[in-house]
Structures are given as C-alpha cells and as structure tokens.
Length: 417
Ligand SMILES: Cc1cc2nc3c(=O)[nH]c(=O)nc-3n(C[C@H](O)[C@H](O)[C@H](O)COP(=O)(O)OP(=O)(O)OC[C@H]3O[C@@H](n4cnc5c(N)ncnc54)[C@H](O)[C@@H]3O)c2cc1C
Image 1 (tube, rainbow, N blue to C red):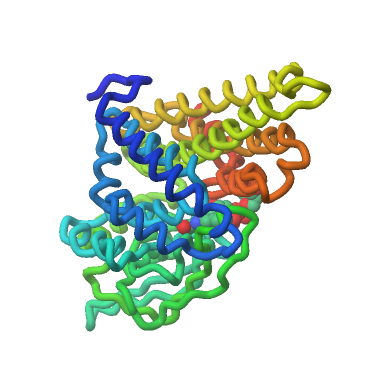
Image 2 (cartoon, helix red, strand yellow; image 1 turned 30 degrees about the vertical axis):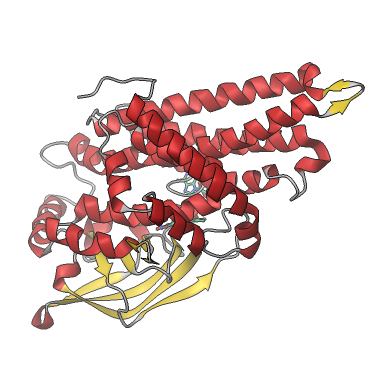
C-alpha cells in the first residue's frame, strides 16, 4: 500500500509537465473554435494519440499508479486546457473502465484496442447507461437484452440517452436489463461491436457547455450481439442472477442477504466511489483555469488609478477561490488514494470529493466572470466558456443531490429517499 502523499514524485511531475504542455500548446488554442463548432475535435484527439496521451497504455498507467494521484493529476491538467476537448479525449476511458471492471481477459484484449484505434485512425468509445426515464434512478432502466440460446446471441432493444460519443463510437458499451424482476441487480453490460446492424444515433444534443464533446441518444433496434459480448461471460451472470433470485425468494429484493446489506452495498458503491474523484479532478482543472485568468486580470486591470486587486472586495474573492480549489484537490487526491489502495469509503469520500469539487468549479467560474466585468461576459475571454463547461460537473456521474444522498446514507446507514 502506498502512503498518502500530497506531493507528486519526480516521475509524476514529469508527466504533469508534459500534459500541461499539451494542454497549453494544443488544447487551449483550439478551445474556442471547437466550442463554437460543437463538433468532436478529431484532429486534437489525433494529436493526443500521436504523442501517446490518447491511448489505453497511458490511461492504464495512471489508473494503476499506487499513489492514486495519476488519474487526478492527468484530468486536472487536460481539463485545465479545455473541458470540452478534454472530455473528447478521456470520454473513451469511461467505456474502457466498464470493460476493465467487468470484462474477461479476452474481452479486455479484444475490445479496448478497438475503442482507441491508432494514431493514424483514431476511434472513440461510448458508455450507454442513462435513459430518458432512468437518469439518477438507474433501477428504472428499460433497455432489454434477451438471450437467444439457439444462436448464442443477445438481442437488445431500447433507447439510451446522454451518451458521450454515442453513435459516433466504434465500440458501444450498453447496460441493459436481463431480468426485470430483480431491479438494478438484473442489469448486465454488453459490447456492441463496430458496424452492428440496429444501433443508430438518435438526437445529438446542442448543449450549454462542453460543446466540443459529442452527446447523443443511441437507439437499439433488435441489435444482435454474440454471446461473447456479454461482459464477464454467461456463467458469471447466471451465478450472480441466481444469488439475487435466492435473496428475492427469501422474502423479496428488499430483504437483507445473509451477509448483511453492508457488504452488498459496499461492492456496488466502491465502484462509484472510485470513479467519482476523477470527475472531481476535471472540475478542479476547470476551476483552476478560471482562477488563473481572474488573478491575472485583477492584477493588470486598473480602475480608479490602481489594479482592481487592490480592492479587498476583489482580493478576498480570489483568496476564497484559491482556498476552495486547493480544498477540492485535497478531497479528490484523498479519495483517489483510498480507491487505489482499497480503503473502505466509510463516509462516501469519493462522492464528497465530486460534490465539493464540482460545486467549487461552478462557483469559482462565476466569480471569475464577475472579476473580469464586461469582458468576462464575452467570448473574447475564456471564463464564460469555463463557466458554461463547469455546469456539467454537478450533473453527470451523479448529480450533486445524489452525491449528498449517498453521503448522508453512508453516514447514517439509513435508506434516504
Ligand atoms: C453532457 C452529458 C454527458 C453525459 N454522458 C453520459 C454517458 O456517457 N453515459 C451515460 O450513461 N450517461 C451520461 N450522462 C447522463 C448523466 O449521468 C445524467 O444526466 C445524470 O445522471 C442525471 O440524470 P437526469 O439527467 O435524468 O436527471 P434526473 O435524474 O431526472 O434529475 C433531475 C433533478 O432531480 C434531482 N433528483 C433526482 N432524484 C433525486 C433525489 N432522490 N433526491 C434529490 N434530488 C433528486 C437531480 O439531482 C436533478 O437535479 C451525461 C449527461 C450529460 C448532460
């Protein structure tokens, strides 16, 4: 187990500086253009692939860094560059993690390389869980996967929404209901390989922020995938469903299992707790970017014959902004370290980090606009884009309200509705 540290080691500093250089030289200059175009910035993703930032190797290296600081450090730097473009670069990682977490060795080896493609022919992947009637309430998912035993194929029908890279992905990871009686215990994840008939893109959303990241509905109309596309395999699924049915037979899905709720909840929760700090780190990157612009502006803009930072009203705002950003980063780093080192999230520390960092990003980017005055409100300066971008952090990967619900439930042990 690695000790918790607040300092990056030499190797991490080197990676951070390299990422910062890419964010400053390649991502940031392209940010305004792709925000206006509202399109996936393929040339930037390709550049990232050429230098090795857009690759499974790079992602895995950071993911398995025992200090836990690899992913948050990488996210912060890339999102400091620009949130929309950075999400286009790291969005594939969401689908890749779905396969890494649930797939067999063979599935990992087969599908993850196809998610990324290569530097000459970059591809992206999508993770499709949310549905029009199943956002925060994942258990009300309707997309159905039915097993056709004669052909050893799964037939998937339904409509997914809000999928990052949905419809333009080479590989889609789709979560579907395999046993409607079991609620969220009856869900399974499937790979939908490139070019599978029946999968199509529905509406592409025109968004408030992160506009360089493609977000769309994904329609699944009698999509047939081979049995080998069920993540984890049929035997594992059958065993898991059998356990859930046993529990249901013993008195309903709500009856505590022999081992108690604690263990069951912890298994599912640990996955979310481990992924949420990464979103927190994205928020820290956006907040830091806006703070830096505001600090620089406050020191150079003069009114009443002196730089505006000479006014406590402005200086104190900057002090609060920086304090909140540093506090957010510490929460994120702590949760990331806990995740990598298998620490129990007894106070939902992963959710805490995402909640605080995302709310901080929203607040800090709004303060930055205020400090830049009229200029802050225009597209001549980047803080209005950063503020639009920051709004996503309190929504995706669980809204702020859901984070609070999870934290409160974890602290009290009570089901809070
Ligand atoms: C740009 C973008 C990209 C996304 N990318 C993906 C992706 O790649 N894959 C994917 O599967 N999904 C993705 N999502 C979906 C995202 O995770 C959901 O939008 C999010 O979970 C919220 O669901 P919802 O939009 O249906 O809101 P709802 O669940 O309808 O919530 C609406 C409001 O009600 C509140 N609320 C709901 N329940 C409670 C409660 N019990 N207590 C208190 N308040 C509550 C919420 O906090 C929110 O404020 C993305 C969304 C966006 C906007």
